[in-house]
Length: 351
Ligand code: KG4
Ligand code: ZN
Image (cartoon, rainbow, N blue to C red; front, side, top):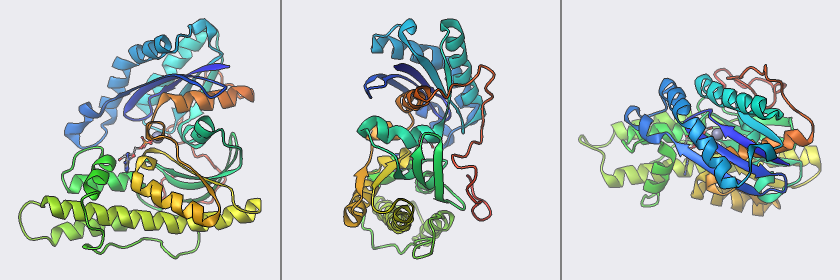
C-alpha cells in the first residue's frame, strides 16, 4: 500500500510518499519561514497564498523523488484540520483533485493524529502508548489506544508550550521560530541565575499552564539594567526558561505515567511528538524519566517531529488499512479535537 500525503495546516508546504512497510519513499518540506519572519510569526493570509504558489511543485517533487507514478498510489491523504483554514483548504483541494483524476481514495487526516501516529512509522510501536504532544498550537498528554482512539489525560489551560518558546524568543529579539533559537541560546546559559516558576508542578492531574512562565520571563527582562539585553542575559534566561519547561514536563508526564499504569496495568512506552519534541534538552529529560519509571522512550527524529508530509501519508496508510476513507465532500475542520469526549480544561483551554 502506497500513499501520498500533503501537509499545509501551518507554515510548511509539504508532501511525501510512504509505503505501508514504513518506508518513506520521499519527504519534501518547503518552509515558509522567510516569508513570515519579518512579522515575527505566521501570518495566515501569507501562509495560504504561499501554499497555493508552492503546492503543485512540492507534490510534483515528492512524486518524482519517490519514483512512483500516480497510477501506482493506493490513496491520497491531506491534513483536514486542525490548522489555519486557508492552508488546509489548499492542501485538501489539491488532494481531492488528485483523488478525482486518478480515481484514488481520499483520506482526510487530523494533523494531531498524524503527529500521534508518527512513532508507529519510525519505530513500529504497538498500541497503547502514552503520548506527550507538544507543538506550536497544542500541549497535550494522551493515551493512544488505536487509530482514532485517543484518551486525553491533560491539556494546557492557556498557552501551548511552543507558543511560549516563540514568545520568549520574541521578547529577547531572537527571531522566529523561537523554539530552535531559545534552545541554541540556552546551551551557553546558566539555569540558576534567574528564578522562574514551575506552573502546575506538584498539582494533581496532567494539565499544563505556560502563560505565567512567559510573564515571569518578561518581568526578568524588565528588571534588567536599562539598555539592550546582553548575550549572557539572553542565554541565562533561555536556559532558565528551558529548565522550567523541562521540570514541568517531568512532573506532568510522571502523573500521566501513573494514569497510564492504572488504565493499562503497568509501564509502557512514552512517545514525544510535535515541533517542541525536536528540543534535545527536553528529550533528554523525558528519556531519563522514562528510564526511571520502566517506560521505553520513543522520540522520532527531529525532521519527523516538526510538520511534514510523511506523517500525513503514514496516518493515511493507517486509516486506509482500516477502510476509513473520506468522501470528496469532506469539509476542512479548523478545530478538530482528538478526544472530543475529554472534559473541558479550565477556562481558556485551546483544545
Ligand atoms: O508541530 P510544529 O512544527 O507545528 C505545529 O503544528 O504547531 O511545531 C512548531 C513549534 C513552534 O512553536 C516552534 O518554536 C517549536 O515547535 N519548536 C521548538 C523546537 N523546534 C521547534 N521548540 C523548542 N525547541 C526546539 N528545538
Ligand atoms: Zn504540527
